[in-house]
Length: 170
Length: 171
Image (cartoon, rainbow over all chains, first blue to last red; front, top):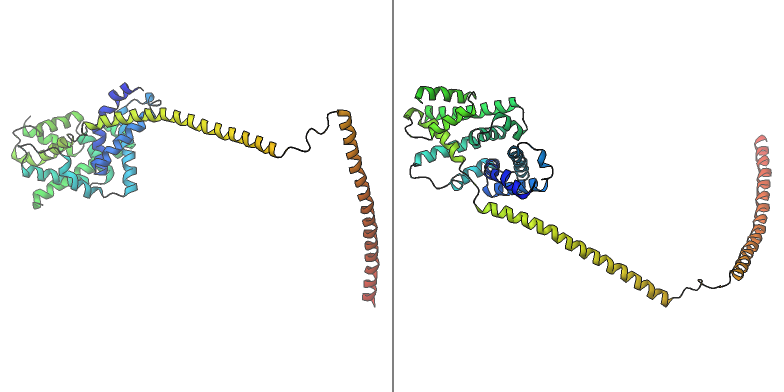
């Protein structure tokens, strides 16, 4: 793989990799470092890369592994940091975006951040990035059943929270 | 799309029965205008997903990555320079060893080397030396023979002493 191929096949995935790493680490600086590490890893192993069919899914898988390594080594408290950085990481709210909407989004973010790791990964890959079930299996190295169960649990946990809010106004 | 269809799709969504296309339809619908009040809450979920997707790396990232790769290439060429440096170091050590050895040889000339020029004389001298060693060996052998006598005497004494002990026991 030469640099032109790298630029067209790998570099465009940078934002997806960044968002996924950010979802796992909760820090934009660390997520950025992970993406750089992924690119360096891919670039250094470029000779073997020609056999890989879905380069983006492959990069996402490396991102997951590197982010989880980082997470384990530093024993992050993801939920807290995600909450802390929620407002900073987004672009400035549009004039149409009311405080009420921002508050509900912050609440949804908390719910998703509080999900178990696997469920959080699956809901992110499906509902934010729009990956197919097969691609999610490839990225997370899980079988179809595990992916579907995790997604079902994640979506239902969010649904439950909505129901609770409606019932008790929490 | 009417609200009945939307409600059906949402139900399918919660049960993980929607396809990617249907999920895209939901996303487009909830990020549009004129959402009924009853669906406003669930709409925020799809708006949240859409908003999450806008998170991106700043434009300087690409430049940094490219710069880093270019530096990586430079590091590789630098390592060539380092190889040359190491080779130069090794050469200096070898040269220094050679000159030091030469100095030592000059300071303490070898006394044994190059003593004879004629091979016949050298052979005679070697023979003499070997004869001397041989004579010394013979002398030493005689000495060793005396030790043999001493050993024999010792075993004889021990042989006699043994029955004497036995006699005592019989008494």
